[in-house]
Length: 273
Image (cartoon, rainbow, N blue to C red; front, side, top):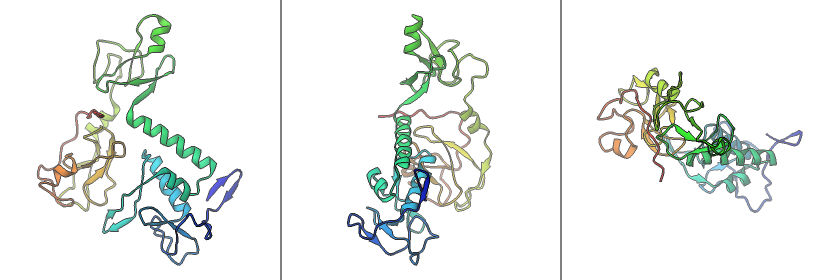
């Protein structure tokens, strides 16, 4: 259902719309919607069938998880997903997005893309957005406050207070209580089991992506490898090697040759190209 103005409008494809490839088969995004359902489906560029509602719900869920690129989740073989990239133009058309939905999608996509390619936070003093260019340095200079005060104003990226102590530093400033909560979580998280992976019954439940440092959790289904929602790099949740490296001496559902990597005590810094 889509809200347009003050009314709820059910999304339906027009069977006479020649710009769509209308198909009569099951909805590949919604297993509860079978091919006997009266709702028309359209074929995406990857060949899988969708309804406008199922496509909207799937893409909205991806935005909620921090993904601004939309990939087909349909299962093609066993547990293997199609993973074909859909353009936003295709999603907007086949999801029949309302004006309100388009605004939400586009604003969220822009925010997530900006977060991927640059580190931006408001200055705690003047609230102006400041970019952190050196990702290994928590001491950041605010150009607006520096100009206003006619002397350098620096703040801590981590605790969001005026910088205290020597810099640059990558761990903390000298303000009381300046700690990296993500790092504390990595160090002290509980263990979890991956039921479908042989021998993995006590693995740290939270990991930092070895490429970009994004905090991730495994949903406990399927194989031991996951794709980072931020940098889109696939790695092994168990040994923390990138998937191609892990697969040289192992496979998706058997133990890693190096065993389970311990809890991480540092967060990788993303070296963007």
